[in-house]
Amino acid sequence: MLFKMGAAWCSPYLEKQNAELKSQLAEALQQNPELEKLREEHVNLTARLQAASEQVGTLQSQLAEMEKLREKLQAPTEEAKQAETLKANLVEMEKLREERTNLDSRLRASTEQVKTLETQLAEALQPNPELEKLRKAVF
Image (cartoon, rainbow, N blue to C red; front, side, top):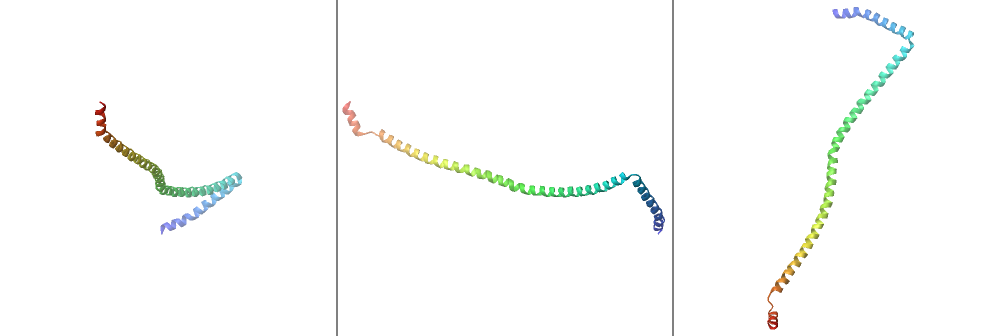
């Protein structure tokens, strides 16, 4: 209760002080018109600063969202790169498979040829009774 009375008692004093300050401001503005321009410019710049601050806040939020999206896209991007690498490896593996098949085929043919030559050599090394007769007849 005492507080309310004190506030009521101070109120006329504050009103008087407020009126004096307004009067001093009006007098200062009349004495210096440049001051009013500066005050208006200050108000204008403050409003622009507030708008710019809000825009910066919005841009920071958008940047944070973009970072989240970039992080989400990083894994699929890595997977796509790995898929491209695997695809290139598959092409190389297919070439190597074809080369191996070709070499296997050539090896089989060479092996058959060696077997044939071994058989022919074994047959050639077998004693030939008619040739033996001719040798004995000549020597």
